[in-house]
Image (tube, rainbow, N blue to C red; front, top):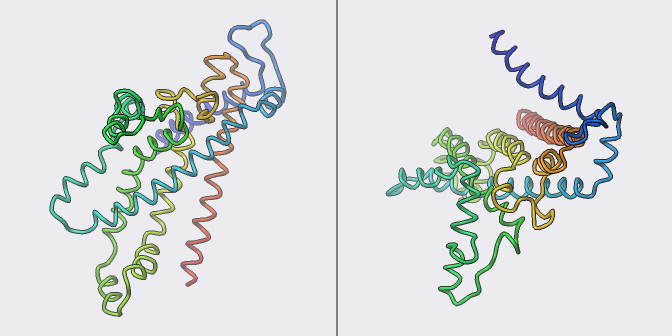
Length: 281
C-alpha cells in the first residue's frame, strides 16, 4: 500500500503547501515587480473585505439549507422506495438520475430550460395559470442556487439512506407492529436509530461537497446579482481570474480549508457522542 499512500500524500500535501506558501506572498500576476513576502498582510486584507464576509455567509446558507432539504427529501423518498409498488424499479432509476448529471449541465438545464423567464418551463406554467412569469435567477438567486444543488444531491441521500433501510431487520418492524406501535413510533424508535450512522455519513459527505459548490453558480448567476450568490469557492475564483491576486486568493483558500475542517471536527464529535450514547444505552 506504500506507493498508493505516498501518491495520495503528494497529491494532497503539495497543493496545500503551495497554497500556504502563496498566502504569505504578495503575488499578483499583472504586477510581478511588486511580488515578495507579505507576512499576514493578505489575511488582513481578506478580513477587511466585506465581500469575503458576504461570501462566507452565503456559503453557510447554501450548506445549511441544502443539508436540511436533501436529507429530509432523501429520507422521505427512501421510505417510499423501500415499499413494494408497481413500477418501483423505474421510479428509483428516475429519482437517482439527477445525481449523474454533471454540475455544469445541471446549471445550464435549470438556467435555460426551467428558470428562464421567457421560454423556461416555469414561465410557461405561470402563463398557463394566468400569472406573470418570474425571473428566478434575478429575483430569487439564492433560492435558485439551493434548488439546483438540492435537485442534484437529493438522489445521493436517497441512495445511501435506502441502502441503510434495506438492512433493517424485518422482525423488529413486525414485533413493533404486534405490540401496537403506530407508524410514527415505528419511525422514531426503530427506523431513525437504525439509520443514525448512515445519516451522519450523509451529512458529513454532503457538507464537504456543498462547501465546494462552484459550477452551479458559475453557469447561472456568476455570483450575482452583485454578491448575492457569491460563496467562498466563487470568491476565490474571482480573486484569481479577475483580480489576478494569487496571494489573497490563497489566503481565502486557507480560510475555506479551515472552515471545512471546523465542519468535519464538529460532525465527527457529534457522531462520536451519539455513538457513545447509543452504546451506553
